[in-house]
Length: 113
Picture (cartoon, rainbow, N blue to C red):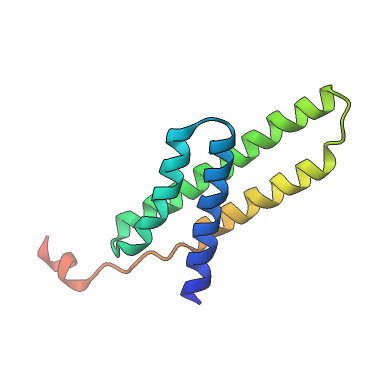
């Protein structure tokens, strides 16, 4: 089951990479591709970082939805399919943020402090 969750997370970051790359935001595109590397770090901070990045990514999809739909509507073009796709991608990205596994804190670190 973990492999499917990781595939979903990686897929979301690949979609964000494509989105930022198409928009000409190369730095954000490459950062989006680097985030899945945190899946190899088994620390609570890495899982929280992934979760926050995915939530920000979902918000970015909603921001893009608002901007692109308003452009299409102003031009008198069809916008419903675009809206459905972007809402679906945003929801999947939020779902990926929800399924990020946060490793439990070990007993040693609790007693060390």
